[in-house]
Amino acid sequence: MEPPAARAEQALYAWLSREPILTSGEQVMGYELLCRRDSSEGTQHATEASGDVIDTVNLLGLDALCDGRLAFIKLTPEMLKGDQMLLLPPDRLVIELPKEIPPKPEFAAAFNKLKSKGYRFALDGVMANDPRRQFADIADYIKVDPRAHPPKEVAALLASYPKCQRIATRVETHAHFVEAGHCGFTFFQGYFFRSSGRVKARHFSQNEVSRIQLLQAISSPELNFDKIEELIKHDPSLSYRLLRYLNSPVLGFWTPITSLRHGINLLGEHEIARWIRVATALSLGQQKCSDLVLTALVRGRFCELIADKLDRPQTDLFLFGVLSIMDAILDVPMGVILEGLPLAAETKSEILAAKVGRDGPLTAIYRLILARELGEWEEIAPVAKKLNLSLPFVNRTYNSAMLWASAFGANAAAASAE
Image (cartoon, rainbow, N blue to C red; front, side, top):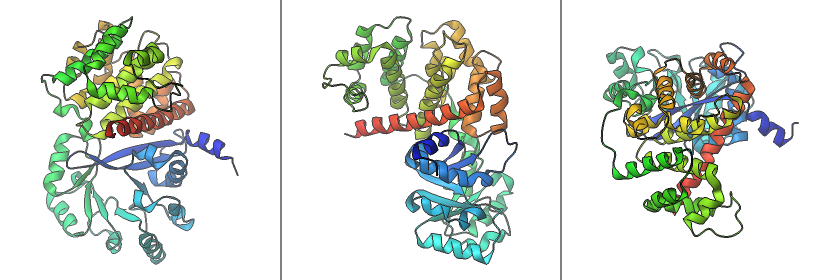
């Protein structure tokens, strides 16, 4: 048997993606986890790698992978035979029964056993005359693609499972979200909340202005610690968060930090700049879907980790990663956000080009981020090759970024709650 350290290292190379499931109030209630063994294996059905999901979840942890929310994992017959599902806590897991699961009597017995232990079930891709209808009594959720059926058929499907909570899948735009809500769905799976369709021009609030000024201050070629300290002092929330961070065991300072300036000096230019970018993302996204903020942190850290492998010495890739989703967090166009930052005109043009899909120095990096987030495995290999990045490196750094973002976000949330 492999030692735990070796297995944990191997887990960092797992090709894992997660798709959020949100409430009608656009709060994340869970993530569907999908996994494959290698992005070079060609097209592989998601359920074929579900066993790998369980191994990866156990090694990396549900909190890190699902941000404390429910994990939805597709079931395979092989997973039932080995009782693999029992390795995961029932209060955190929803077992998905895909269309490929045949309605055999032995499966029904296995499902009832899991149900008796507190596990929840979801019927995925429910259709008219679905052979899995016999499992309706154990199902807690049904997942339906409302765009794959006429409206009357969707209504009939939902009515035939009256005890189940309803999840709409493939919700990719805000219009899809509204339409699914009108159909009677209570949960929505997809990336509609990142859609630029709701981005609008508006004025920034005073708090937003203050935090954008901080981004300005740390974007200057030479940091002015006096100005940074003054801006942080004018934001009590950020001041408190910074002091909590400075006194956390993670940093390991021997004496308590009671002065902002003392702490800023100890952190140094690189670390204080990164902390401000992360804290700014957390603060600006307080009223938004939690996945937006988590995504900003993952993107920033991922870009930072791959920076040494790329020939972009003048570009702050951590900032690029965080900014790449700031338009969705702030509900304003990217051009408006960039106007308020003292970045070089060339850098602003490159960021805008990446966002709209035009060719540019940052476009391939942005495409790699999106492909890895969405689990578009066939897209990752050619983009990584263009950037001269190996697939194992891309995967390990992305999974490391997820772990880092989850840990940082959890520490920030704990500090804010005290």
